[in-house]
Image (tube, rainbow, N blue to C red):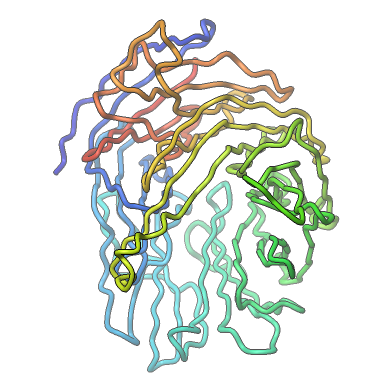
Length: 486
């Protein structure tokens, strides 16, 4: 049920950083979709703000939308619905993307009679309705449900280019093949390519797709070494369909723990992450010993740099890459996920037993690199939380605002004894310059006392100009929040 409130301007919020101020505004409330293991996709498009929660249910991906107007009023709060068809002639939403001023669902159609796996785009309105009209994007052969190929969609940082990549069905002892199609913001096809990946089999591989503003497509492929460690390959598909390949390799016994990627204004791919030293006998937690940085300099040269950490850090997980002129920021955190082993009494009921997880979130880290990949600085802020099953509120949000990295994270209110709070958890903001100078924290506690049992979700967020947009949540509701540093 929509319980939309009027816009409330809360004015200036002062924390321990006495030189900084934050203007905060609360918008409308919507139904909260709390789903275990959910992912979140957040977009600005056409002046509206789209927050999607995605989860795998009923044998397919499901998407829940909370949409707000430019003024923060609720426009939609619903599950995306389409006609799913029947077995061997089925339709499903595989992804949602923001392109130009619109948001689209990419819909996969598996038609066994026609022998086709087709992908199309359908407009999603600000009211949460998925159009029945569609624009064809890509198709490939379909014979077997368990080997029907995989469709990917990616949009450039400026939201002007859509890249669709289809991993062709696996064929034993044949090189992997992909179909690539590019579209402008009006969904007009601008290029298409059939590409073979020499020496690569797509079976048991994981591919992430990125597209730069100039239409260069990148396939970041995760594989494993013979001893089970992470190995990465990059395939660069140029506008003319030509292919260039790069390897991202560390020197044994140092291996990759985690990574993330983005493209920059030069249309290059940047991949960065954390590493550890593999030992014959490992006792306790996996200790990160360094960070790595890769880019395809000039879209032609493999540039790889490794830097040691100031001190080993347990379970250090890469989160986000942000480019700020000549400085590249990598945010990371100490993070651990543990699957809870079902009790012996649940033996024989595995099909109905629900999987549960314990999560640990500790210190936030920020690394700064120059354009050569050399580490300029390493900073961290202390926090510590544990959670079972639902942990999204403990992930941070990171933005580049006014030439600085702005990091928003939740912390324990008890650490700030001179103030009071409705909740045990409070949002905190720090800013970091390109030279690694970190501000004192702005603690959102005095003037912004979140309603009782509401918690800000810093990672369920987006940037609109120089204004940060978030959702805060309790068990039943979400509320729109905007924050601007002054």
